[in-house]
Length: 186
Image (cartoon, rainbow, N blue to C red; front, side, top):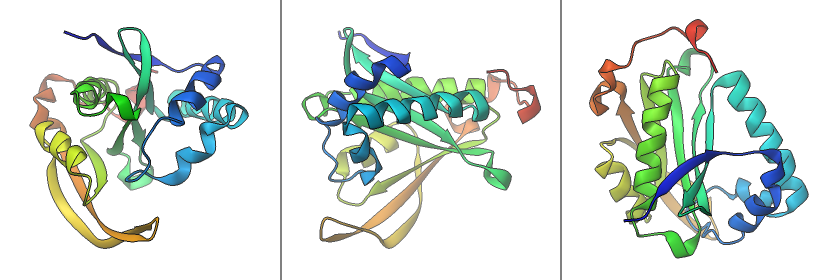
């Protein structure tokens, strides 16, 4: 059995972060991360996410398998009246997909997110042809809540975008205390 760990990022991880992103299939992912495949840009991005973790409670974690960096998983807070929601994201290097690593990393960060923050729900968007991510979200207990028809145009293709949601009470985390944002300690 492989050991999958989530490890906080540090600014000195920029070279590893950039290298990891150069091995990710971005077909069904936001293009934003393409910018961080350069070490200098990766360092700026890592500094930014470290600030967001401290100030907003976001979670960004390196996914490690047997001590080797294979991807990233994240929970990014929404703001204002949407602050009870956060977005789940997961990306893995191509050679590590299809092995249950994304599922286990996502399961771990979901538990962390609900334990640390006052979220009532997590959301995730997935492009319609991304069957692997759809299956993973459904296995994690997410429910497809809406489809944004022709929601994105990427690389010459128009895709529907499915928005999935997972409520705190649906993952058995009702045992976690409900706290106000003022009670959150980073």
